[in-house]
Length: 245
Image 1: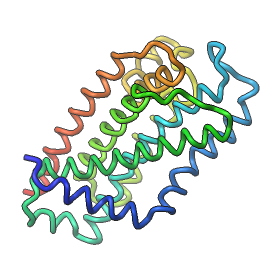
Image 2: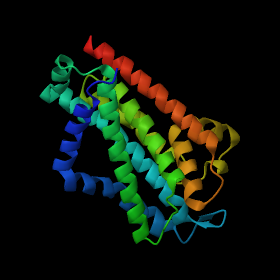
Image 3: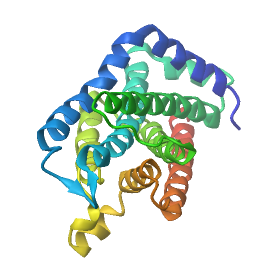
Image 4: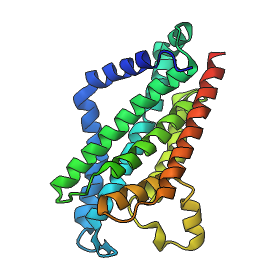
């Protein structure tokens, strides 16, 4: 069912290693800009429940980074499909659909968790030292798992790079700004809170922030992230199997 996943992941790991410094620099750009603009720019003017805004911001940025970098595996898949025909070669190899999905999802999760770690390190340069215990990384891992699985599943439906860019604009960009990264969702009207609680990033930000500040961990958010991730993984397996046919 998952035969061949290690070969798929090994290929992606080699690509990440080859692009090393460029990839790390790219991962640092957005968090650094947000820390400068919202952290230094607004940090002294705002707080939430007695918590300085920078301390509130960094866990949310870590969650957002895990989302965007895990999602970026979709772009890599489509480059390999459209230009290098790698997916065609995998189709002729003894790699099961589940193995292909697992390998690509693990690559996306690796990117996501690495980007989150870099965000935490950048936060430390700004004087923020969140408690990065197991619960913190569990929230980010589940978030990366969901968005990497979603990326693989939807990448099988994409027909061009324009479609990929449109999907990112309509799915990832709104979620980045509305998923509780920059502001507490609790300050919005009840109807708006209900809508934003449908976004996985909202639960990832909430869980990561609670773990980082020592607050009570929202187990419901973790359970919802896990369930959404499993659903996205199964969707990816189905779409890969159909693409192979």
